[in-house]
Image (cartoon, rainbow, N blue to C red; front, side):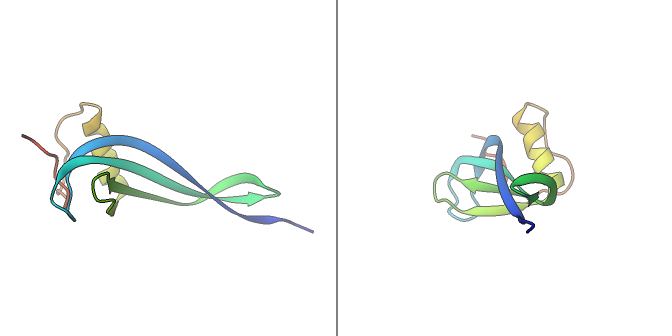
Length: 95
């Protein structure tokens, strides 16, 4: 008998201050990475899928982002400067 399946892992990459596309409030957003791994006998072996998203801490709305956008947002949170490329719906909050 072979026991196999998948298991999900959630990693918090950064906390950013953005204007929410849903509620319009400038609030903290968590940048998260969700990795699903194939398991064999409850041992995670290799990743099956990787997805990135930001979640508003004010209203709870979640927005999917691409890997490039996630890397840009993470670099921005570490003080890497302005994000490059085309902007997405959520823009950094600048008072």
